[in-house]
Image 1 (cartoon, rainbow, N blue to C red):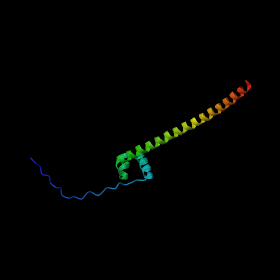
Image 2: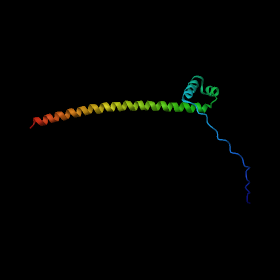
Image 3: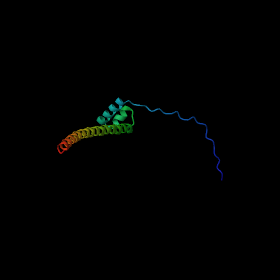
Image 4: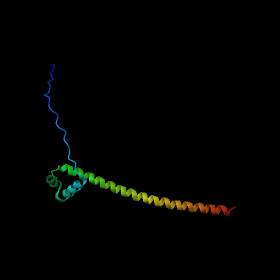
Length: 106
């Protein structure tokens, strides 16, 4: 049996939806309110989906942890630079001592 395909009536495509963009200050205040009043209540009061607040909170935590990782990396870098400077001084001293003993043995 052969099925006939029917043409669908020409429907206008739905207009593209535009997402509302929120500024960083709004997000911080919304997260503070969610922490204080609870996510569900804050989302309802602000006209947001609760999932949006959860997403913002997860991203803020990632950003904070990256900052902590960067601070740790900077501390490690400073420690390594101090170690390099110390070893460089030791190396210079040992070169001078070796030169001194080399002169004395002649």
